[in-house]
Image 1 (tube, rainbow, N blue to C red):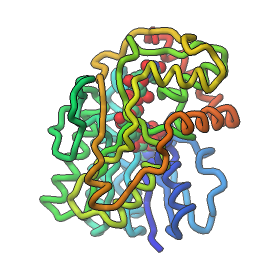
Image 2 (image 1 turned 90 degrees about the vertical axis):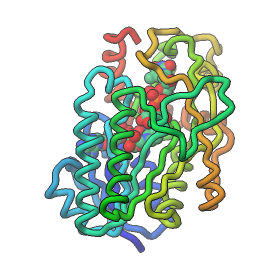
Image 3 (image 1 turned 90 degrees about the horizontal axis):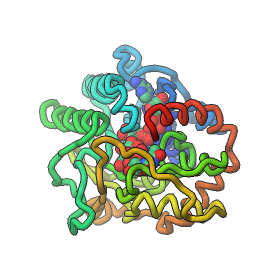
Length: 332
Ligand code: NAD
Ligand code: DAU
């Protein structure tokens, strides 16, 4: 049995991870989450109370973080400001949470000599041309484009420096775009599914040629557990499931799954600095640690996600109008 502190566990990927860990191991979990607009306690309903505890708080709160890190065996750090579009409107919270928050956590992990796993993104590598035969690997140089991805890149470099300078027992993973239940309606897939439910046409940025490398959140969780168990200190592992799709194809699949004409969407103003393509080569994780994704059929995973949003309207409805009002102001 292990005691884990999971930061950001009320968010999309963190909550999926908590459900996954409690369902697949006998670990105990404490979630530390500030419950920003992106955190939702409803995502943590029904968990076994003898192995799960929720603490509302900020990862930049040194004394709270120190106490919690001291009480567990390992920290899995998901908490972040995570949305690129928000980072273009107001970058400051991204610096506070992603940089200072990560610094606060690694300092506590160093003081207490605790195992640390840092969750990061493929966006730290910038983007690829559509016809580039190469994909991102652990040795691809950092080249982030947005305020969000640059703060994630900065947080990765802090963790690397704490390993080298202070011997922090840390690993890092950089994952591609996740989909699945509990994702905020500001993000691409849930936004379009809930638009269709509301009788609104999906909104595609620019021409819709941009490519993302989709992975189910459960596959991300199983990869993180594998790294926690078998990963080597100081190592970075890329997590991906060979799920490259352009945005136009994803919107068409959503419309098809929801019984709509596949061309019933609108093109809207593109995101400034919009990364063209992400693609992950996860050979290292697969060959060195023996991980394999379980969700290999994107269309089936997407249909299950559509079904989840249809069945859980009470989960997403409170955020929908405000999110769409913000996009409307930006012409998106
Ligand atoms: P999210 O926005 O859905 O959730 C973030 C969570 O962190 C929320 O519950 C929020 O309340 C919490 N939080 C924010 N600031 C905090 C603070 N200062 N203190 C404590 N809690 C705070 O994000 P997500 O999509 O689940 O992403 C989780 C992590 O995974 C992030 O580190 C992100 O960079 C990384 N990641 C995301 C994706 C993806 O596709 N969404 C892919 C790769 C990596
Ligand atoms: O690659 C991993 C990253 O994936 C994570 O680090 C981020 O936290 C996560 O938000 C995600 O970033 P993206 O910017 O790729 O995700 P988003 O859901 O915002 O957009 C996915 C693609 O869809 C992107 O090319 C922009 C486009 N898009 C998005 C929205 C919200 C649209 O075409 N229309 C939309 O309405």
